[in-house]
Length: 311
Length: 319
Image (tube, rainbow over all chains, first blue to last red; front, top):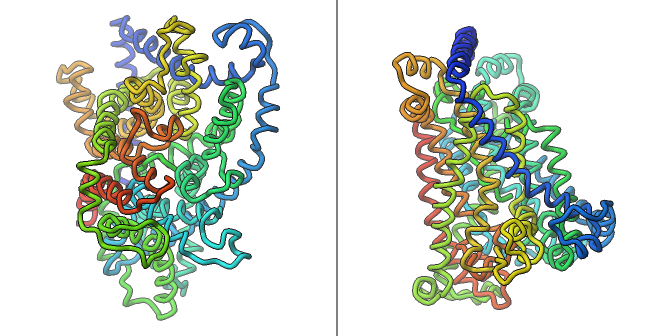
């Protein structure tokens, strides 16, 4: 997309002229901007209410909300609900499971997807487009379509005790990793193959003349150049896998092996009569995603929109 | 994950960089390279085949069978009996279809246009546009399961914010927004829109940036006002993004599951096709055939947007 980039740069001075002209015409009309701000601000406030309400509720002791009601400003604030939710809810265990699922899934997904994308985009072979289409289609299916046979398959696999204490692939974290990896490979292959296609073929040709084999071309040349896409996809996938609710729900039977997102269900049961605790539990669960979001917002958005303005 | 995702429009510019003819033919490779490449293709393909394609086909097969999910030898052909049950006897099937349609309609009429509106407003030279974007996009980071919990704090009849604000708290008119089967679908959809609109906004912001500025310039020079410029020039110019947004909206409403499952396991007014599949899987009596028939119905409906998307994406690109 070299051509697009160059037109964009060329258009920039014109852009400024246009923007100045626009803002002049706007200020002349006067009243055109403030309704926009008003609307956006009202919407932003509405958008923030659910989270702020959860945070507010979580900071108030139950005794106070029982006395004054939840819709009140009386009483005091402390972190008591967080301490209680943390100790009572088993969050360390759930977070640990989330990490044990998320990190291997993201690494395996990016590794396999980049291999496939490399093979599809840098070489021409008979079924490469067909396979790419099949990969992409697989990711678009609702997971429920294949959940039942996958569950039955995992139940039928016999494993020795040192590999699985259930004797089958059910109730194992690595089964969730496998299901998630399979489901995410399609999307990542699609995005990465688009990205790799834009890398000039001459680079591979030059490497080949220098005697580099296929693996060296992949690992030594293409992968380093794909780093921006890998970073964006990696961020996106961390959030997606952390947020996955469905596969652990189907594949894990013991409550203490659930990742945090699926364990929310149990928290809801445990804390049912105590909204302050439930709110604290919800906020604790939000924190990791929010930290990633605020730190890597650009990567995340780049991941989502990758392919739209690549190059 | 439950977020349906599609890489944004590779439909427009992506082609033509390396015409296939210039890509390497396998013939030119050494034996060793061929083996390496073969392994690189085989591993991901095997994973896809075993964990995605074969189970999908097995769903179709099992939908014509009678099985309790125990021994493989107990699988017996059952003709169309499962489908007969689904279409004629299941009390939840038609409500679920209706709810999925309502889900799509709500997202298509409210969620997606709201995201587009936010994107268009924020694409102007607005002070603090980054802050607004950050706020609107924040719910996209949350799982729909967690969103169900967070909105429970709003919707609860005893302690929820909404009934306080409506003044119905503590009265006989207090509404249990997630529990009352005549409103809970809409309550869940408002919560889902909270997330959906931000997602659409980000995709459209990227789409709007890709529109050639000279188009707008020409249009305003021709005397079109802002509204005309947008609907007649800018919006049509975003055709590739629009297709993806339509596909995302449709697929998202077919995939809806987490939020209703967290609220009440998808019962009492919140039945969806995806939930019915799971109910027959995790229930005490496993009736695999009927669950699979529901799965096949979901599959057939899902294939419509998927095929549209794939044919648009790959036909313009690979020719």
